[in-house]
Image 1 (tube, rainbow, N blue to C red):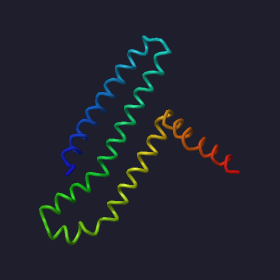
Image 2: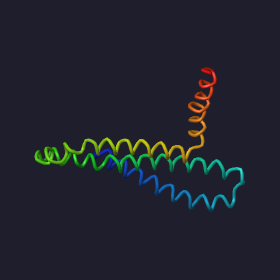
Image 3: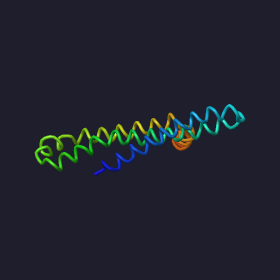
Image 4: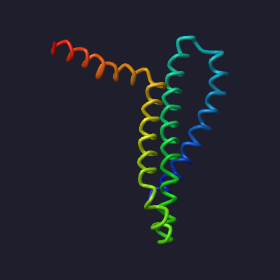
Length: 133
């Protein structure tokens, strides 16, 4: 059962979001006093943290309903026979959706991920295609 880890992840993610909000308010004050070269480094760190929190929260949102269904089906055998057993395709769809959205989040929010993805798949695909012909 993943309910407790999901609750813990939600709580910790909320704490990270609150800390990011407080840090951004402090950052605005500090940036007024700092050099312009420091701005870019702080922005990259903030984007990475936001990406990781987004991935964790989206995973929790997609997994939590399924875990609740597991808990209900353990407590009620009729529910398991009538409802839970019919939701296998739905569960698979949610897992696929989770994977696709997390991939998109990584692509949108991380230049390093995009560059690595291009180098691994696009460049290698072009090289392989040219060597075959």
